[in-house]
Length: 275
Image 1 (cartoon, rainbow, N blue to C red):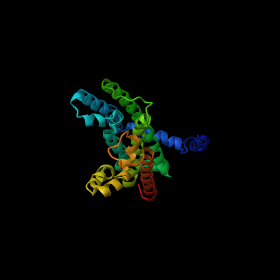
Image 2: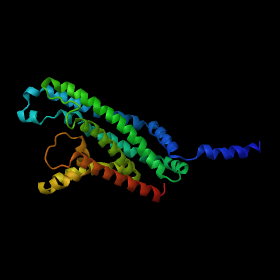
Image 3: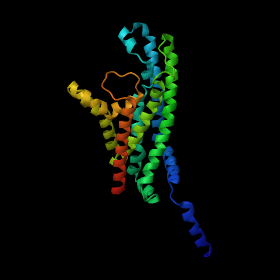
Image 4: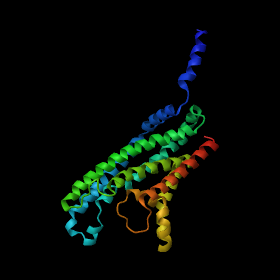
C-alpha cells in the first residue's frame, strides 16, 4: 500500500491540472445549476421571440384606423427585433448574477482555491454566458422576424431577410444582448454585490438616457448617440427616430468598448481584492 501511494499522488497533478477548458466546463455546470439561469434565459427568450409578434398583431388589427403618418413610420424590421427592450433586462440581470451569486454565497473562494490565478474564472464565466446568450437570442430573433413578416404581409409591410439591413438588424439584436451580458458580468465582478451591480447597470443603460433627455436639445443631441444604450442598439435598428445617432457598426463598436472597459475594471478588482 505504501509503495502505491506515491504513484497515485504523482498521477493526480497530471489529471487535475488547471486548464482553461476545465474551467469552462466547470462554469458551464455552475451556470445551469442556478435556477435563476433557466428562468432568466426563458424570460429573455420569450420576450425576444414574442414581443414583436404581439406588437405586429396589434398594429395589423387596427391598420385601417391608423393615421397615415403612423403607417409611414411603421417598420416591420424594428418591430421584429423590438423584443430586445424587455430581453435586455433579463440578460443584464443574469449577467450580474453569474458572478455576484458566488460572492454572496462565498462559493467564489472555492473557485479561486481551484483556480488561484483567478482571471481564468472570469474569462470562463464570460465565455460560457456569452455563447449561451448569443445562441438563444439569435434563435429568438429569427423566430420573431419570420413571425412578424408573416403577420404584416396582409398589408404588404413585410421584409425579406435579403433586404438591405434586414440581416444586420436580426443578428444585431442578438449581438447587442450578448455584449450587454458581457458588460454586466464585468460590472458584477467589479461591484461584487448583486443589488449594487444591478443598480449600476440600470443607471448606466436606463437612467442616464432619461437624465440626458431633460437637457437642452442641443446638448442632448450631441451626447445621446454616445450613451451605452443608444450606441449598442444602433446595430439592431432599421429606421431611426431622428438623425442624431451613430452608424450601426460604429455604435456597436463603441458599445463593445464600454463592455471591454467594464470587464477590464472587473478583472483588476478581482486580482487586487480579497474574495
